Image (cartoon, rainbow, N blue to C red; front, side):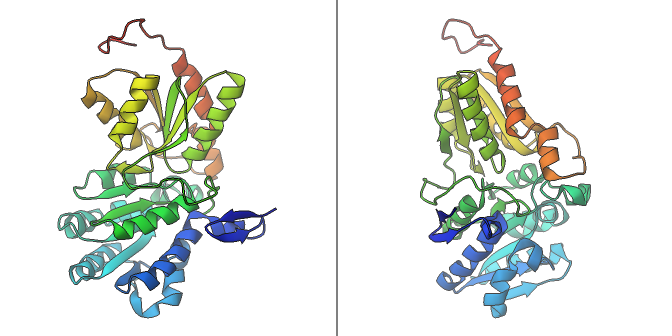
Amino acid sequence: MSKEVTGTTWNVYDANKLTQAEIYGKVLCDLGNKYPNLVGLTADLSKSTKIGLFEEKFPERFINTGIAEQNLFGIAAGMAKTGLLPVVSTMSAFASMRAAEQVRTDICYQNLNVKIIATHGGVSFASAGTTHHATEDIAIMRSFANMTVIVPADGIETANAVRAAMEYEGPVYIRIGRGFEPTYYDKEEYGFQIGKAVDVRDGTDITIIAMGITVLQAAEAADFLAINDGLSVRVINMHTIKPIDKDAIMKAVTETRRIVTVEEHNIIGGLGTAVADVIAESGKGCAFTKIGLKDEFAEIGYPEDLYSYYKLDADGIIEKVREIMGKDFEEDEDWDDEV
């Protein structure tokens, strides 16, 4: 069985090439031909982050700083000041925490055109332990002025995000997984645009706002709930966390009045917080809940087991939707006290 994706044909034997990391590595090589000023950098993680594909094709435009993440981002900032287009790739935990000061002060403060492609996001490297989990990175990165934060749903969306980032002025943080994430999209042309959410499923009863690997799970949950519970569930792929699509959020609040956010991240400071901020500022009320890690460090194990444990899979989302659907609303249209 084959499937057309990004202009190439693949089958079950080479499906691993369609992971987020593999696709971004190949796309980066294509972009290297388009942008002669594009340079790649990593901190001794060429193979793990797949930026090694760019290194093989453009060795004269690649720097490996060794295990020195602070230097990695400082060098990238300096290169950007000279007119180069640095693409930095390392693990999400290292980019957001080990080098936080350099990202903030060297790159964001000067609003430099550095693109950060951070791999092993969330609990995708779950067996490596807490030091390699990244469940705070979105909260950290979205707090930096001038930083744009993108969390693609799969490899196809990663390709779109990387291409769009090159045309987008200023620092961009793209957070992807370890490389074993399933594909959701089967084509690139679905309307990806930085700062604009994508409607995955239409619905009128409740809205699930998801990002990253939870988009597929939310879509599967919506299909199950439609068949088994008769619910009309809207699913939004909020791939850009900053700048967030306020219009999409408020449209969902107005039309469904029930919102569930799902994120492979701590529920403090991430997608759920960003959505809640928009709703709170609007002055409108709705039934609202977050799914994610509840202010705790992740357990250690296989990623799929942790997705189930933290209710990030379809079963967990179904459970939460049923719970929030049990909340009653008043008959009137008074937005001050609905729930």
